Structure formats: C-alpha cells, structure tokens
Amino acid sequence: MSVERRGPVLVEGPVEITLDDGTTVRSDRFMVAVCTCRRSRTYPWCDTSHRARERAAPPPPGAGEAGGAGEADDGSER
Ligand code: FES
Image 1: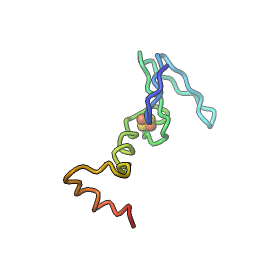
Image 2: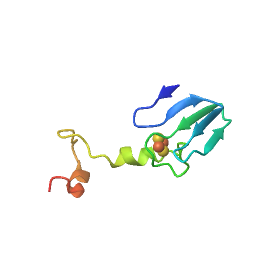
Image 3: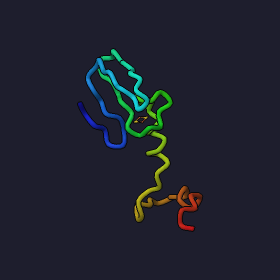
Image 4: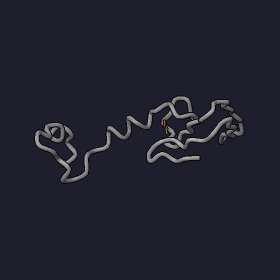
C-alpha cells in the first residue's frame, strides 16, 4: 500500500471495500487507487478529481514570482 500526498491510497488489487451503507464494491485491477478526498464521482475509486483541488489552492505567502498577475485576480487578500 502506498499513500499519495493529497491523493489516493494505492493498493495492490484485487480490492474489496465496504462502504458506509454496508454495500461492498470490488476492483480486480492490478493496482487500485482508493479515493481519500471524497470528491471522486466514482467513489471509492479515485477519478483524479483531487487534482482540481490542488490547482485551486492559493500559493503560499511570499511565493509570488515575477509576473504573478494571477494573484491579483484571486481576491484572497480582501
Ligand atoms: S483521491 Fe483522487 S479523486 Fe479523491
């Protein structure tokens, strides 16, 4: 098993997961990406929706680069 930072947990398949409602889902893939962000449209399987959240995160303070015009449109300083 391997854990991706801000991403899925990668588990060698086959994998069987019991969901909150008691139903069981199964994947027979060689490597299975299990969603940890709960944004996946195919939950509990990762559909890479976690990547959109990473891009939407504002840059850390002081990390601006020359020509950082995108920061002014953010409005995060208001
Ligand atoms: S971890 Fe990839 S969509 Fe949730």
